[in-house]
Image (tube, rainbow, N blue to C red; front, side, top):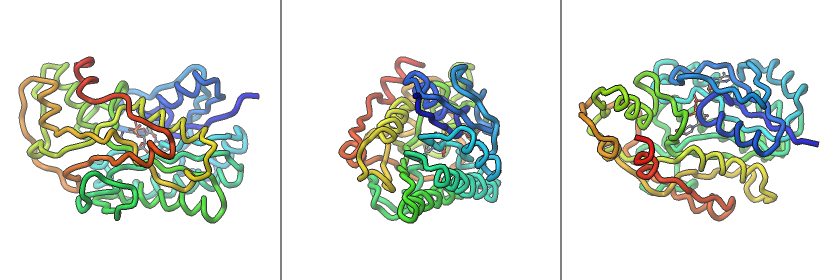
Length: 302
Ligand SMILES: NC(=O)c1ccc[n+]([C@@H]2O[C@H](COP(=O)([O-])OP(=O)(O)OC[C@H]3O[C@@H](n4cnc5c(N)ncnc54)[C@H](O)[C@@H]3O)[C@@H](O)[C@H]2O)c1
């Protein structure tokens, strides 16, 4: 019999790629989303998945959904997923990113899932940590997005240590690729620059553009999720894994790769200067390796 995978945020950027891959792998796939993301051009629906419209903050609906679909695997991506909007609405970030995750963990505990993959963020490392960033460094959360995403990591760890829910936690470093959000000023930088270039507009760089990010292709994020779901190892449970390439580029360098006229916008509060993943834990324990690098991808897609 086919196994069932539930992907929260399955209509969004990363979640939709996970849905497509699981469908190709012949899982019975449930994509759960409330279509609330503001930066997304559209919400993706794979015709071979079952798409359900549920808010993860609604504990009863979440519980009902789990009772109905009985997922073997949960890939949890639904979130208030951009930093700047959470500065405007911190309570919403707490509700969705913390309480929403708790609702899913509780439903997973009650229904006995085989594995629960949680999507956290490299913004856990903030400004205080040296590069490259390792999972055992102190957290330095600079904004409500980071605080709430990292607080939910603790929930995942606790559900594992206290109740044996088999959780795995990822910290993704800036994810880019096909279907990346491009709407508005708070979409991720690669998407905004490509949109501006395609429209013949000036490319807008925030701050001095010297901030460096480890840009990770969405396909490499998908492969980390699949490896963790199917890994026979119990060593990975309750553990955090950096998912980043171990290389980084400055925002100015990306603008140069894309080409065209540039202008500068004021620096934004609450954002880190450098992200760079030490990905040795994911390489060693998950057998994960990055396969796509930003420069090559931009050369093929600009
Ligand atoms: N994109 C990145 O660079 C990056 C980096 C680190 C971590 N992450 C994490 O990865 C996950 C996916 O990010 P993404 O870039 O695909 O974002 P996204 O905004 O494209 O996807 C999130 C999806 O969740 C849905 N959603 C939001 N609130 C919901 C709710 N209350 N109930 C149900 N669905 C809801 C949205 O409608 C959206 O489709 C997020 O958890 C994010 O924090 C992303």
